[in-house]
Image (cartoon, helix red, strand yellow):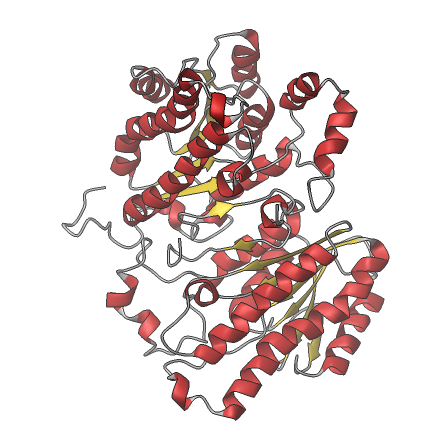
Amino acid sequence: MTEYGTDPVAVITGAASGIGAACAERLRDGGWRIAAIDLRDSDADLAVTADVRDRAAVTAAVDEAAARFGRIDLAVTAAGYYEEGIDIADISHGQWDRMLAVILGGTVNTFAAVLPHMLARGEGSIVAISSELALAGSATDLHYVAAKGAVLGLVKSLAMEVAQTAIRVNAVAPGPTDTPLLAPDSLWREPAYLATLPLGRLVTPGEIASAVYYLATEGSMYCGEVLSPNAGAVI
Amino acid sequence: MPADGTGRPAAGAFADTTPDHRRPGPRVALVTGAAQGLGRVTALRLAAEGFAVAVNDIAADERLTGLATELGGLAVPADISAPEAAPAIARAVADALGRVDVLVANAAAMAMSPFPGADMDQWWHQIDVNLTGHFRLIQAVLPGMRAAGHGRIVIITSGWGVIGHPNATAYAASKAGLIALTKGLGRELGPQGILTNAIAPSFIDTPQLRVDADDAGITLEEMRQRYREQIPVRRLATPEDIAGAVAFLAGPGGSAMIGQILQPNGGVTRTRA
């Protein structure tokens, strides 16, 4: 059996695919234990199948991770989904409520669940995955953009609230990233769009994970900041 | 790497934007203002990351040559505000180590004075070193980066360039100029695989603190405490914190960062002054 308690531990929501999975892989390479919270199972050290909208389920998963591994050093909130190409007039109340509940509610639920454990140790790092659309806006998909923007307000405020502890709260705002959230026919994959990016290509999940890893391992002077590995989408 | 007529290299043409954190990145780094403090620690960090490192500062003294020896690198002393300095530096580095893959624009001049009595010589000195000196140095290393089809430019700006500061208008203007330079170069050079980003530190625990303390007529520890009270996280950055940001931007993990201003300043630029 592996001895737990010395390796750093990360709780990652949405860890079964896309950016969350890339973060799990990067952190595992760096010697971290991973507790995954996702609707789907994964090969994490602890994989909890739960919906981030469910505060009690998220809290139970985080408490189980803390009990199992003895500590929580990092939380990455990557759970989310995207609905592309919907004009504001066409966003239903149901679509709006669900988007806010998953992205904003899921982030709040995770923050609330990990914070007591971090406060007890007096240290920790929280990295929320936002979006470059939250910085620049978007002509469509306003519900997604609003939710990701609200995450930034949450991050900046919690960062200030815990500033005088050694708990750091920051965000990463990816540019258009090559994950299953972008459909094969997504406009973000169009060569004409990609040609507008200084880097000329989509961001990879691994590049987002590198920014998260940097914040988690060397980010103790970042307080409410937003890192933007976005291929130049927003400068 | 020859352009294909669109100004954009073929996919995969430049290895250092390949997003794999395990791959080695570029190999030769040039750090200005490296004789002490942040520049010195950054040079040491990049050497530890496997870079061959050339170190520049204004004086060819033991601090600089000793550091170059310690790194197994090259000392290229010069006043970067002199027009002839930049091409000479680039040539010396190319001859000894090879073309510059990573430029860390760290050298800076600072003079505090109230604006109404601001001295024009002091104004131009700060602009000439901080902004124009690095403009010229970027020009000088750019042909090598363009020929290689990759490069990283990491500019050390300042939190004061973001939010301003009383009695530091010239310094803040020069650093704000560097922020605009970062964004412009990010957009212009990004398509060629050359990634430009900046770091905006605020209070760092370096030998400059001793100067500040002497100016204020207080002890070093009192100076540290006075600065801490202005930082939301109540901790001064270490040079290592900032060198870590340089290593991230210069390394394989920074391959999607373009035109960004990192602010590892403990929240200083987030507070309402």
